[in-house]
Amino acid sequence: MIRYLFFIFLFLLSAGFFFGITGFVLADTVSDIQRQISVNNKQVEALQAEIVSFQKELDVLGAKKNTLQSTISSLTLSQKKLSSEIKVTQSKIASANLKIKELTLSIGDKETAIAKNQNSIAKALRIIAENEQVPLVARLISSNSLREAWQTADYAVQFNRALANDINDLRVVRTRLATNRDEVSTTKASLVALQKDLSLQKRSVDASKTAQQQLLSQTKNQEVNYQQLIAQKKAAEKTFEMELINLQRQLNLIVNPGLLPKVGSGVLSWPFSTAFMNNCMQRKNLFGNLFCITQYFGNTSFSTANPQIYNGSGHNAIDIAAPIGTAVKSALAGVVLATGNTDLVRGCYSFGKWIMVVHSNGISTIYSHLSEIDVDKGQSVNTGQTLGLSGMTGYATGPHIHFGVYATDGTQIMTLKQFRGANVGCSNATMPVATLTAYLNPLSYL
Image 1 (tube, rainbow, N blue to C red):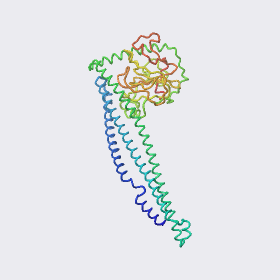
Image 2: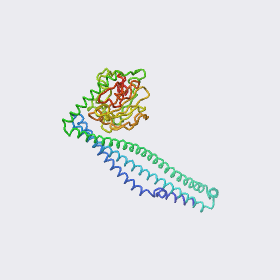
Image 3: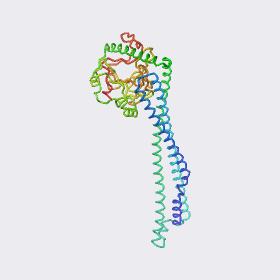
Image 4: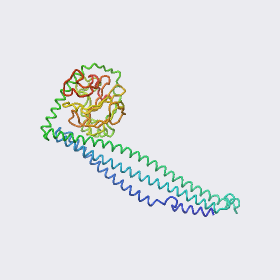
């Protein structure tokens, strides 16, 4: 009887009775899912080609003279590029969901097969128990020959071994599929986060579109009016800078160089994502550098080599070109010292929307010309955390961020009117004010 049932078991096993029942249905379903994933991948490839094309057009516009038409065209192209990037992310999320569904079906199929296998074998064992009145040990003793005894024992061993191997193999497959499903779930989570970032960018670009409409209204869509507006901004900015420098010379704040990080220590990260900075490296020919920098700190090689030397000469930060809506990251963990928007003061062409973060190593960082601010005063932030979105608020004739590094001891947040009654256009605007020696070259710490 044992021999008979064992051969039945082997036959059913080879025929796929135990774990092949749902195979045909699953195969069709998985095939459909894979076809959908393939379609999504082709859509992603097409969209990525569009994005590359939009970026090339933006680069061409960026190399041209700043005109009203070029500004409007850049904003329009940025919106199209962003829309394509959002679609890419949505397609990737859809593919991740399909992959999770595929793995879940496979896991469920294997689990069902294991259960059926166990039930079938339990039934076979019950049949053996019901039909075998003589225990296996007794049959071995009462066998007519030693050969028959060994065969009886061997059948039982093979039966148990086949059962154990089958169940173990299925469990291994189930564990592997569960691990894959967890990995895809993690991927999906990152893609959902990316979609959230892109949604924020879209919100920012939509806001800039409103500003674009206001610009068209101000200039009456006339290039001559636009150039007059740019000239007015430049003149107001120059007046503001001169007044600010005069006030800064009088600030009674002492900067202790010994409390600052060592030059070249690399304590700061770039205020953008790794992907953004990698893209800058690929656009070296456009900017002449690997970091999308459009304006450096100071105006001499001496100021670059000596981070504590500013003396009111040249640029007090670095400007980094970034499409409107690009996530701006904290260069180091710290606490948000303050935020502000100088555009709220009529005639003040300065930082626009800005954020200052104070760090524990004696320096603070500022991020300005933003389109959106996503943090609050007093909030703790981590290195790489999104602070806001890039823009072109304040004195900015193109989308970028003004990234500055200050010695914390030599910096205060105030209105210029609070200090010696300044009366320039920005006198009522709240902003960081620093003694001249408090301005540090960001490249000395990146």
